[in-house]
Image (cartoon, rainbow, N blue to C red):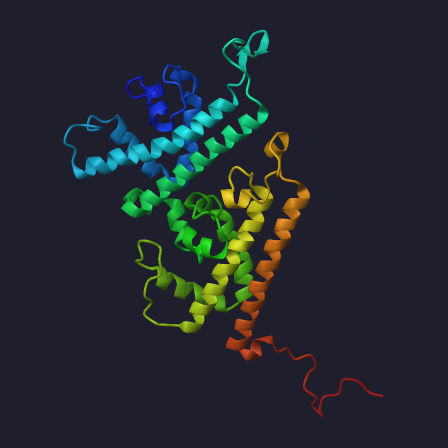
Length: 338
């Protein structure tokens, strides 16, 4: 793990999160750390974790007068430890409310100096922990992109993203606000790809191949994921690409709202579902009617974009929407007799 190298894991967690007690036994939270590391690896790739772990366990970690490479690796370890720490401690707190003993679950409390928190307090604390875990994960991915870490550039998620019309959170943000969250962007990457290969490909028909070739050339060699300069300046395909980039995030959000928990969604989206009052309602799932309403809005907005795409296709090829309903009338052809 990226913690407890010198049996100092509890202190490391306290330093990274500010909430974990340094005198707690690290063994009690070790499983939660492993689960948190697994979740982070799924986002950023095994290569990133292995590089950080090798550096953390090596003798060069935190030496005096570090080289530039050592400084980068020191920072990489820190950037990974922070979101892992928040995720692990949140999971630990969820299962540490009561003690588990042979006689059953117990609540141990010093009645003179301690009080059990109200549920709304627990809800507020949970939201704060989840928010910090999400934001520090965003910070990690943004740092990996900014520093051009090779293991990140070669990770599976990033490679898949660069083949999509909506290839980063900035493009996604332009169509639907997700708090500029790369974490959420990569969490929904599979749906992004599904929408492109099913909905968009079906809508564009033969133009899909042309747009894909234009997109790949546009994005080729662009390390930051921003638009490059294609060899052919095709204004029409650029216009079509922008329309597609508006439609895909809306359709991805339809799936996200239906399938993801509120803890995974960006805070700006969650505000649409949260209960107006504190208390038990704040920790409950959003009402089905609210979800249906939000999904309907997203689908309507996506439908409007698809109408623009159809109009673009019609203007690009006026004959594409014309169909011959009746065969040509040839006097020599006898279809029926009276």
